[in-house]
Image: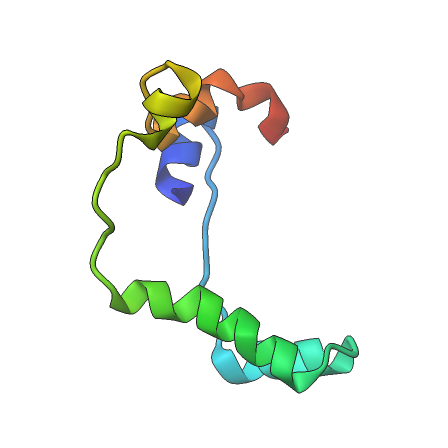
Length: 82
């Protein structure tokens, strides 16, 4: 995603995955309860271990429009990224 944003905006965007221990400690210092930090970690990391979900027709059924890919989304909304 960072590469696609960079390509559209003509500006280098980088993503660095957080270290689990550093993330946990930072959130604890911010006062977030440990159980909520654990949930955030699960929501961030578990999807990486799963295969991509099947593509559905839900967007078209709900909106009547074909879905767009992420790069198109960035192109259509480039002013919101500044």
